[in-house]
Image (cartoon, rainbow, N blue to C red; front, side, top):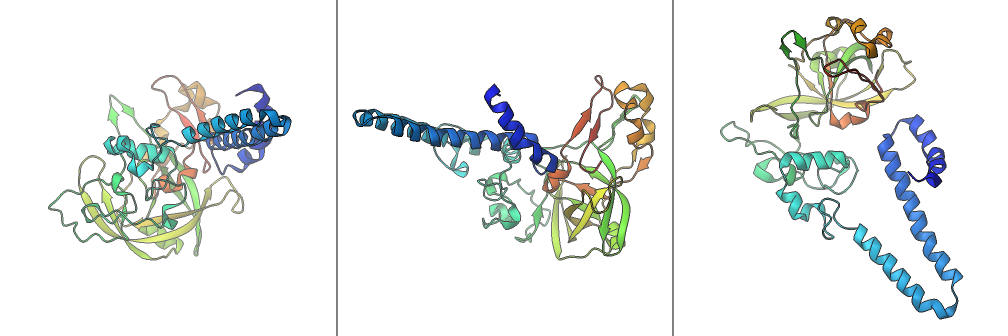
Length: 336
């Protein structure tokens, strides 16, 4: 970043970073865009005011060239060849489906219209009409449904949670090496009070889930829905009845009135997530973990909540403690 912008960036980002509503990269993008608009707007005004009448033709040329630059910047952000919507982009259509998903997620675009950053729940764009899918995504993001599995009755209000080219490792034990997933003890608050539980943080799908048993214990209720789940390793598709519930979630170390997040999730009867045995990790063997071992959990945790891309603000790493290759990594998130 140029030196002249460093102090401006500090003034702009300090308060916003403390609020943790956006990532540092998103704030930097907003800041640079704002500065670019300021410069492009005021520079032309200064040129017009400072010139005499004999330079009017020259000023017009300057303005024309400046306008041309703005038009060039308005090209398709995917192919950068010409000006058109992403849904009309030939290169985007030719890209692999997993690459389309990755681009949409990286740029925080709406899954349904592919053009804005609003939530898909409020997007007026129609549901996917390919193969009678009815999922809340654009047809260019559609994963084909295998035939012969009785999925022709899928309605428009069903949610497609097929992971876009993400394969989540659940458990590996090879040569006495164990892979542990990102789990964190949390508290949830519902009509029946506050309950201690465990959440698994994963960005391999699009919809957050909660066990039906935990939802019942918390007294959560909501509208009924049908959920279609697509396997990450094969083309299997399962349909299940679910309830859309909303609840508050927060870290076990935070006060109930501080750092509380409202989460929407869907209940699942058989959400059998693998137990994470954190007691198998000997923190004293690793330098990066010894410093923070008092903040780490050393017991078996059975996740009852699966937080996904629709609650990505809770998955963002706020701080990472790295070691050497093949050594454990500790990540601090808004939930702990």
